[in-house]
Image 1: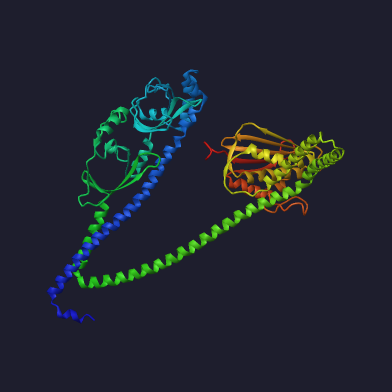
Image 2: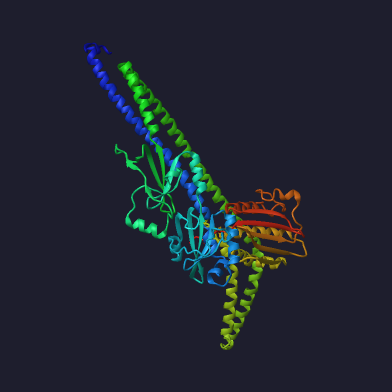
Length: 590
């Protein structure tokens, strides 16, 4: 097969072999450098995402604090001039100690600090004017202040987040929290990696390299220097440019800092004008390139033709193996996609089944309440029949003067019947499945009106107690009403045969949760029953009276809303169902 090689001299073959070997070595070194850089960039992006999430989590942990403090009456009174600073100082110190921030302080509309968490320390902010800082001006204009700088009082750097203090729609002052990020920087240094955060002016404000802090990535313009000086942003610090040069080879993303070369990857920090940079030393790339160069040169010098042959064969085998591996991975991905599709389909079917169970439960509830509602509607119908007969008699006698009163009374009775049937129509509608802000008192009022006829028929007294107004949860009004209906109807069934039938509903708040307690005066729940109460198809009723899905569906609905439901016996008598739902934090979504 290779007899044609004999026609060439040894020198010519060696020359060709060396030329081919040199080209192979150059290609191998270049490809190794590009591949290594790609791998390092992928690793850097992953590390940047981790560092950015850590930084953002640290900032977001305190970002709510100025807003909450600005709404406290102690803070509003101190900037309004109606209260002394002592109580406000104590309140700010308690809040600051619990949150772990560096300082929490209040300024009046002129920028003068009137209360602070560190009022009793030598570095107290009380009495200092910080109106020159941009975070004060931003908050005094009605926005949120977000500013990193060196404290003019303490000389310690930190992040300042501010929020305006409003009274009757008027800005009376500013609340500011200072966050020191030294602990975050210390954790970065412990990682042994080169990472830093630069602000919009290119000044390094956070870094794992202590000697890089407050260094500039680029020269500042005159306007930028004036802004920094006016805000006294880096008070007492000398802003020195870093010794940065682009890579002489022109490769994008590679730069030289002093005598070291780095691969730089940058990620913007969401919610700010900061940039997070991750530097990877190029030493690793050079080491890999030199290793490839040395191995390629030795192998090429020893057996150029044989190595080329073996290399070609190995490349073909490797290509086949990669092709087989790719085929296997592709088949695995296809199977995973099919499984994911099946799981999503199953989840959609389960949610649909739950919705159907909720609808079926509501229709069953409507069927059981139909007798009481029919009795309530019969009375207006009988009255309408009487008024119609009276009107017909008046027409026959020509007495039309009194017809207006008869017609008005008939209209009033039809409105009453429409209100009764309207409740049935509202309750029987299907859930949209969209979670929206729901006022629990509104849901309970709807259920009370719906069950009014059945409660009256059963001779049961329902009382509703609410300790705090506006308990808003993120839920589905239709499904949360179904939960309340299921529990109250179970209470009515449990009190069958009792002389004293009462249902008490308590609506209160506990921390970040709204608590709804529904207590009846029935015989209570057996110890053997309570462990299986929320299991599907478990029921204590007689055959034909229920299928045991009401409480199971209610349990699933409450869990979907991030809450919990539990049952027990009241201290006095009867059963007690407690429904816990997480309250919405902040303003409800529009």
